[in-house]
Image (cartoon, rainbow, N blue to C red; front, side):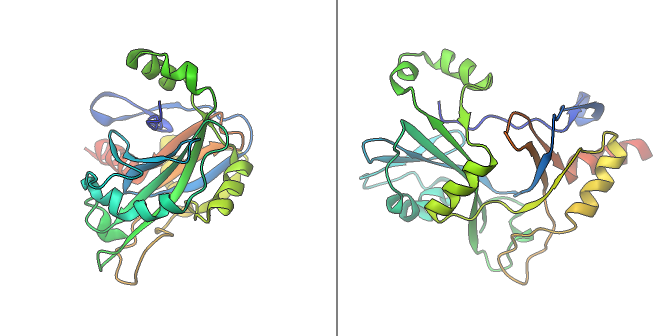
Length: 239
């Protein structure tokens, strides 16, 4: 019930990763944030004061555990942070963080030359109806989640809770009226808006950014634009 849903690509992916002209539809202003290339992590805050740490796919540590799963360095990096947070006041609150740097991904060198580790908050969900959720089967929960059942905070609420927790958000690049619709224009747009990462951890970092996450202020639409996808598409055209 707390697994983070997949973010669709802004231009739909076709066969073998090719981009199609079909795009995610945005109604209203679009907020642009940096997409950091790390590992999706979650801090699950429970109303009884307990918490659970997890990657996107697995639960790794619960408050009071003597031994945690060391996968991806999530527990080591975030355990102290989780202990400092207040308990959830409204059902389950899930803070979604991008943990990056170190040796987490092949792109870590773009953020650090000294194997430093950092993290940024990128989303928060609130699940108030716990009893009903625990009555669902795993299959029912998956369908509920994949069809937008999780309640994510809007931009204003996200900024407030980040300040309350003392978290830094993924960098806000800007707010625009609309995204370019063609594949070539979107690729050029990426280059202009995010020429290098805004979350480098030291001076020796490579500095290449992964891309941008675009969302409406209300968060009823969200999509990602990755340099890798557009560069691969451009190479296909040349061939």
